Image (cartoon, rainbow, N blue to C red; front, side, top):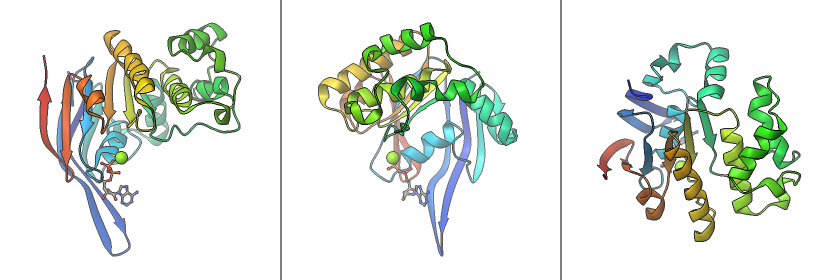
Length: 225
Ligand SMILES: Nc1ncnc2c1ncn2[C@@H]1O[C@H](COP(=O)(O)OP(=O)(O)O)[C@@H](O)[C@H]1O
Ligand SMILES: [Mg+2]
């Protein structure tokens, strides 16, 4: 069974008299342990696709299943709890809370689940991302690469089975991009399923599978060995 399955996903945005079809009939399967890049021109529907796969956005029609479970058939409360357990999401602009320290930002998804992460587990996570010395700093006191790694730590704090990242290296220099990709590759080698939206050929090149999105459809796919 695939860990993630999309069947005939369509997404329309209605703004006034205009309807934008962001996705038209996308079907795909992702197996557990895959590391997949999603590429394509600006406006092609990549972010919309990632948010629908992660259950953050409801499709206009079609079905999303994670681990065989239909997200559309769950109550809001159930789907929020299911997402917190199974899905980590790294937003393009980090979306860190400015009034919280790095440590507090990382703990937010666990606290939402009523769990306070232990100091040891939080420190181990921070060490794996090389931000253990930055935990008591506020986002404004961190570099872009450090903020990005805090956002990744936050996405991982509940130990999700799938990690989604929307252009996670878009604001980073090439050295920091390499560091972040090393983190993703390490997580993937440990068995985690990863989906990354990217414009960067070096990032896509680090992924075994590359999906190309064009005008709201899957325009092609490459799998390297
Ligand atoms: N909330 C929204 N309201 C209206 N249109 C939207 C919204 N989000 C995305 N779109 C439109 O859907 C299309 C796909 O957007 P998006 O998924 O963000 O593309 P990409 O991430 O590939 O650049 C674009 O035409 C965009 O303008
Ligand atoms: Mg986008």
